[in-house]
Length: 103
Image 1 (cartoon, helix red, strand yellow):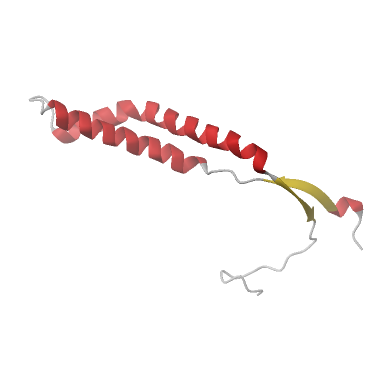
Image 2 (spheres, rainbow, N blue to C red):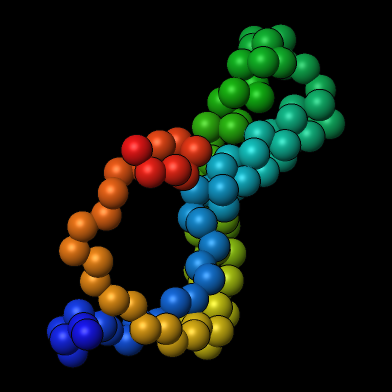
């Protein structure tokens, strides 16, 4: 039998991953930069690639901020969707291969 210390009630809830939202913000900054550069025309002083790169750099902070805010809103929405499960401590687990089989 297991002791009361070996089992514990925990809440498991789905949470979106943060990194894809931050990367989407940078991609959004790149797309907006390309649209701005191609719609305003080419500058004589800078190449198209340099203009897109500079604007992407400048717009990356707002893009990452937008991605983080969207992630935060989705994360807060998922707070009420948790479910309680009982977890128990396993003293020793056999190491497994990459296939999931015991060694």
